[in-house]
View 1 (cartoon, rainbow, N blue to C red):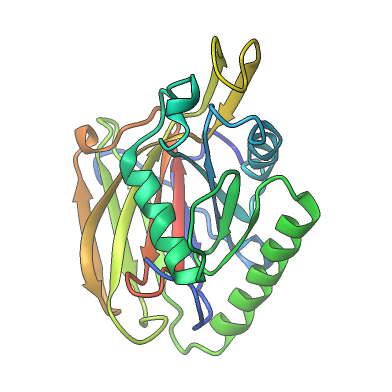
View 2: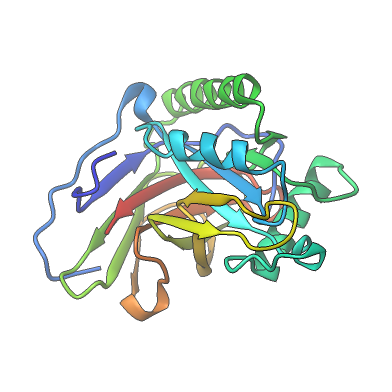
Length: 258
């Protein structure tokens, strides 16, 4: 994706199914079409886990794709084994726990990739992850084609850094949706001094620094939410996820780079 794109307009719809829980500057929106409709891939990882670097490298590659919104959530449950992950947040551990409860899994693990909030895979299994992304993309296409007015999420950022999020169109499925804004950094290089990755230089991309619920119970129709710059952490950009809090399914999403 091009880092100088100021606005990304994403129009797409998640298939009903299993899974869980801006503006002064001139903007020129781009519309994602066809197979470019982005699928959300969340990697749950830790700098304290020696199995995670291959998954982090894969996520960095996925972040370059037009059809993927890639987010790297660092969890805190490996901090005790020698290296405290500087990006870990207990809230991200809880987000992973909610997903795994929905998946019927009794525990969290790393590296885990969650695709559109409905499927998951070991994050280092490239072929399996890419297959799940392809399946999710096809499901989005089929579901969108069945909608009379597919939902749209638009993001725009002012010169001062404030964000405007605009939603419109029909609700993608029954029930209310939460609107979540996720701020992320561009890239980090960390020299790990202790723990399983001692002596390694770890490279992390799209590291999530903040996640905040903007609105609850969106059921379709027009909605505009303004987000002050100080409420968004991260120097890389942000993503907006429209997510069913009961099932975790991500019905649609948008992304903008800073």
